[in-house]
Amino acid sequence: MPTFPATVRSRLPSVGTTIFTVMSQMAEASGAINLSQGFPDFQADDALFERVSHWMRAGANQYAPMAGVPSLREAIVAKVEALYGARYDPQHEVTVVAGATQGLFTAIAAMISPGDEVIVFEPVYDSYAPSIELQGGVVVRVALRAPDYRPDWSQVASLINPRTRMIMINSPHNPTATVWQADDLRALERLLRGTDIVVVSDEVYEHIVFDGRRHESVARYPGLAERSFVVSSFGKTYHVTGWKVGHVLAPAALMAEFRKVHQFNVFTVATPLQLALADYMSDPSRYLQLPDFYQSKRDQFVSLMQASRFELLPSAGTYFQLASYRRISDSPDTEFVRYLTQEAGVAAIPVSAFFADGRDDRVIRFCFAKNAETLATAAGRLAVL
Ligand code: PMP
Ligand code: GLN
Image 1 (spheres, rainbow, N blue to C red):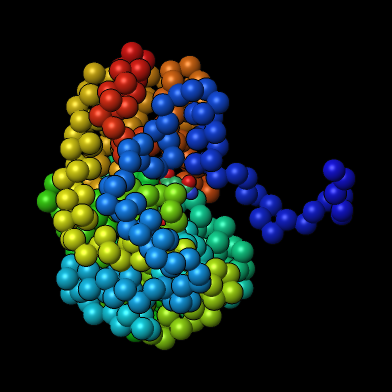
Image 2 (cartoon, rainbow, N blue to C red):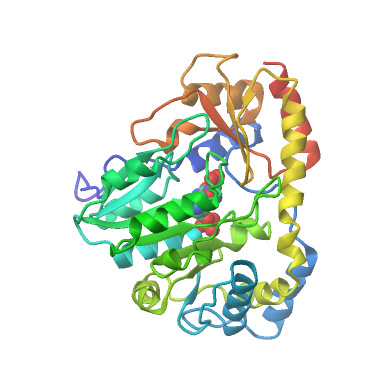
């Protein structure tokens, strides 16, 4: 089909297709085991599907209220209060969104004007920078460096200036699988005191932290909570990434701005899914057992991978495991994952995809949110390399 105009003026000239789509397509085309894009290969609980079906049959199939169905908003704020001790108002301080990606995008669109600077930590989840740039914002990157990927708070302090409008954080962190400690949150709280900088805290892996660690939500820190959008996703917590339902918490004044955008780019999210999630959340064990559930998958994968020449980095949270392949190959990570997918039959994510300059530490990311048999077969293929 001919196009008009012949050359389309791009708002994102240097952006291609997201690495998660690229790798999942490659995995499918080669029949490889897909440990690249983060999603479970096992089924969610039947009781959750029963609730969706119940609400559909009960006629809950028309638009939900713009901010989300009341029962779900109430269930979210009750959970957040029980876990993190912060009381959000279900009327004015929580909004149900179509996945965390949309929550992040909407928070950025509501806050960022052309020329505003946004600090992010790199390696950085791939949606952040394009979302900022679409608003005319300027991305300012703080380096997290292999192998421990710790934030350097003095570097963050040196980057803050009157143009700094927002700082985006993500713990547990994708792709490094690191988890911030109370000291990190306190350092950030101190740094932002007396500024009007807004925080966007991506906490989609809030329930997936290992080895007895505690998730440090910004909601626990009053000096951060007062300036933060807290973004989470039901997809990770209940094994339904394809449902694309999440939530955003923020103090009323920030949330009012958020909803001005939300009402026109999404308006509202699938009604029966919201009602079902509200019912399902009423049993806290459904999210409280998640650390043990995923920790045993991590341990299984780590133990199987001891037979390989991959060197595994620590995984303190998320359902990801980083691995250095220096003992196997010196090819760039994008070439190595192509080889791994097409020749070895296991797809992974090249970590260079999370760096603006393509920085390549010869490290790749595996997703272990998979059945025991899938992990065993994949590790068997990786062990012979
Ligand atoms: N942020 C991070 C750090 C993620 O890993 C993901 C999904 N893997 C998202 C946001 C997006 O979540 P959702 O699928 O709910 O849009
Ligand atoms: N966030 C998931 C990951 O890191 C993928 C989500 C997506 O494909 N956009 O793999």
